[in-house]
Amino acid sequence: MNRFVNINVGQLRVGMYVHLETGWLHHPFPVNSFKITNAEQLKTFAALKLKTVQVDLTRSDTQDLVSEPGDSDRLTPSILVESQRSKTELWRDRVLAVQTQFLGAVSVFDDVQAQLIASPQAARTLTDELVAQQVVKLAQERDASLHLLADAGGATYGIHGVNVAVLSLLLGKTLGLRSEELQDLGAAALLHDIGKPALKISAAACALNQGLAAGHLRDTAYAEHVGASVTLAMTMGYAPSVTTAIAQHHEWADGTGFPLGLLAADMDIAGQILALTNNFERLCNLPELGNEMTPHEAMASLYGQYRQRYAPVVLKAFVQTLGVYPPGSLVELSDGRIGVVVSVNTSQSLKPQVLTYEPLASQKMQQVDLVELVGLGIRRGLTRNQVPRKTLEALQPQRRLCYFFDSSAVITAEKDTS
Image (cartoon, rainbow, N blue to C red; front, side, top):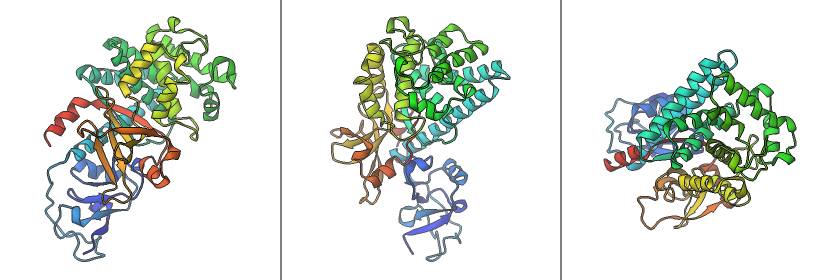
């Protein structure tokens, strides 16, 4: 019997060890090769546009999987035994669950956008409910883990809004904001660009004006989206605590932002947070992909050439929250392996979880938890040009980064039971 067989997606079973011959961000699973451990994973496979999947018979918990080589379409009934779940499998399942939450949040944003003009109160209800769920989750846990997720595709406004909201809420918690302040911050972060579609501001215009000071904007109409977003938020009935933050999301602490050229002393804390998280997210996810930075490069830029734009206490708290290697950063470990940071525990941000790729290893993709591996760390951050092409395609096949968080306490508890 051949070691590898191609099996129809509808014939996959718990216990089969599968290998997906595509980049890991082209599907919702954190790694390309793994053992199917539950029915939820089978449902995910069914939703993918795949006809067949490669199965490794030698690593599958199956008996009489196929009768002879080439008979992958004629599976015989068998008892599939689920082995004890490894820590990697627990982590993978957790990230898959977080991916589902992220997609749900983007879907809610799309509903908000669709109802905004005709039913602003209904749009506000959706916004408040979505943000409240995340604020409650943050309040219940001592810390959280931020995860790198697969590119959800589709419109970028929702992805950008959810990413900025997630980063803003985590930073707000680090800065000690109360629950009601986090609620207002989350709403402002989610809605800060809602005026762009109405003004029909193109991705090209956004890219053209990214990171420019007020006096250097190449498209003066671009600045109008700030006021348009504030106006729409007001029609939804939001108080100044929300609309002011939206109004300040392009203001910078040194007075070079727009539309008013405010200094840090003139800005609310929510506006300062939103100005930073919005710029960081855009550095990583340009409206027109091509010159975006890795998150590590973006963090270095915030602390380097853009440092004067942000209040020192806010910038320091952001680095404290995400570390110098936020999820999506390409890194070289101290043992020479190359990987991508996939999860960061906000209470141990210098010890993230890394997905490594070794083209000559039997299991090419491996998840490494630096919290557990004493003596192993990150030697340096890498740019995309410093990573071999095949490795980059495996680790980061799609440029757009998506973020969502969950409870680090839950992950730790699950790991302890494995």
